[in-house]
Amino acid sequence: MIWIFLISLAVGVYFICFKNHEVSAIVVIDAGHGGYDTGAINQNHGQEEKMITMEIAYKIGQAIKKLDPTIQVEFTRLDDTVSWPMDELEDLKARIQIANEAQADYFLSIHLNSSTNTDAYGYEGFIKAEDSFSSSVYEKIASSFEDLSYSQDRGLFTQTPLMVVHEQSIPSLLLEVGFISNDVELMKLDNERIQSALAQKIAQAYVEEIHKEKEAS
Ligand SMILES: [Zn+2]
Image (cartoon, rainbow, N blue to C red; front, side, top):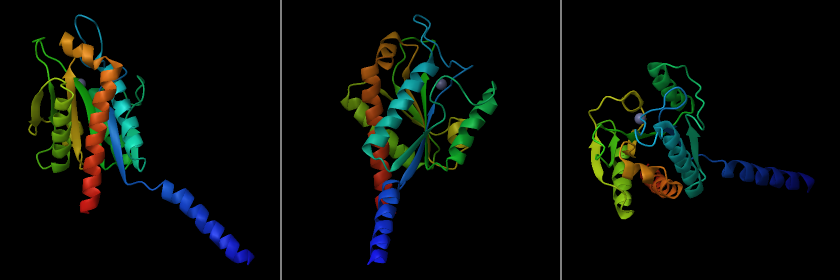
């Protein structure tokens, strides 16, 4: 009797411990720039790209975990300190290394655009040509940003050589969420409520596409 009880207990504990920790996918979210590298700076107000990408990246990660706790989220950085040397090449290599070490399934890099034409606005994405997963994610993001009446879709590009996209074997999307150089767009990008709304849409796009891919496999 005692053995049956102990075995049942062990099975129960096993299911509670391992079922809840089942990882369906690993997503690495990369907040562009950081530390020594400010990224682009708004010339009128001084906001730095690295601070806004950090806020948006964190919010996306939290939203993904909330939508599906079986999706594991890792970040290349969570604050303004970086774990890599002050060197642009080493910097990018380190971000890819973090994804490799995490054995990530998907990589998302968050950036803000900048132009000498301060009227330029909109969001755009960069992927590898053969990356149909990230392409579908981007389409979902673009259409849900439209529902929010947030800015304009500038398109998805496959030919721009970007290390964090092209030197990864996993699906990788670099998303330029908007233009920090445009004062009107910056007001949105720097607004916590709008950051959360955009992050929620990005998270939804990932979770839906991950579920779709899991169902197909
Ligand atoms: Zn950037």
